Image 1: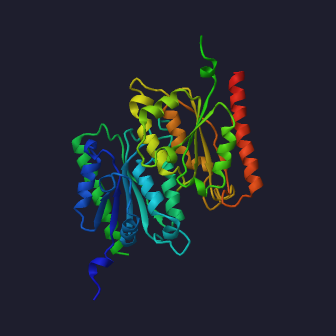
Image 2: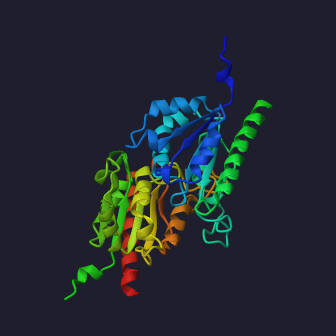
Image 3: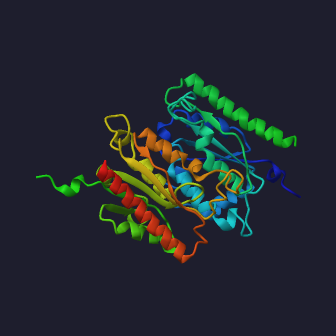
Length: 188
Length: 188
């Protein structure tokens, strides 16, 4: 008998924040996501403070996920370094690419990003000069290269300034976004 | 009496390659660059194999440089993780940004990147779908954010396939590129 749970769509959130205790926004969003049974969260900086990543364990986790989320604050217009290290170590060629691998083919990738500046700043005439998806291009193309579908990012702007109630709304939106994803998968 | 050497324009190459012994291209290019007296090279993976970066030492090095080069192979359309870690740790707000810092203002930043795919692949109708400067946008905007001038990247395409003589030509071009930069600065 097949165990039904194994066939359920699963969301794997790969969370990368070197100072989560300083994070006003990421933690509440994660907590809302965690209320969904199909969501698994891996806290990279908690799990691998010495940057020594358990590659086989991470690869196993990925193979059972349907949607993979890179959840992190923006550090220099990209992820904190441990997520890049995870990419470099875990998504090795023989696992993710053409040498008999393509273990991620058909899965989805999404970025969930908190940024300090406002949405207006991430415009051609704003201080950050480009919409945020331009900065996320390395992730989009990585997904493409691995045969994954890249979903539009979930972004929380003005993370240093938004109020507690705005954070609560964003956390609720995040959870709904994930639930809606699961519901669409169920109906396919 | 001022020591003349201190006023010379200086190029700081921040080299990031986790497996330099496997690198056919980066090492010859570095060696050509190293022949220029005004060039200083820091090999991040050699210096910081445990990812424990000496932040004050790195900041001091930066303040005396005029042109800073991020020299690395492309890993997932970006730098290997230790360079990102260097960015996250060394370019902290109070050093590089507005809180009395802006230590990098007026300096130049350039990427020197080796990529496996061809230049044709880095086109809108190619496999990599975008010109390489689109993937380098996080570096360009980081430079802008720090008050630096971002120079066009020096890129070696098809790094896995080019011949020994093509590598030698590229290494020579790289050296000439740096010499030409120094010469222009001297004439300013």
